[in-house]
Length: 155
Image (cartoon, rainbow, N blue to C red):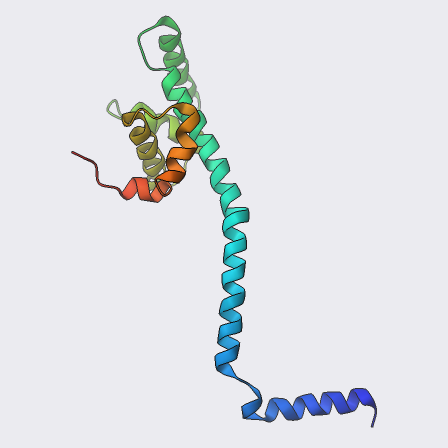
């Protein structure tokens, strides 16, 4: 019998031994591994994804700001925006808030709850008079999109 055959035979015999497998230890090891993977994901892909999303939302917020007010450039931007969304084929009710229109234009035909959540975050930032360059920090400090979306309004 070769060394390889002895090792394989020994492993097979050990696998047949019920006491050789410790299910409690297996569970602990598996959960520890998953926790480490989750932690790496949170500081890696998840954080990067949120950072990118917050950057896009910041630009949406800036577009809304650029159309606010009564000066000539704001009016021209708003008119141009309305023409552009028509070209894209979007149809909005007259009561649809401009923030929702901007988010819908940028994010396209995603589920309306997502459009609503993003628009609510931007409206809350506007209500709290958050500066454009502080929007991402505001979202992070508030616990993220979902936390802001689920928060109760003061009214």
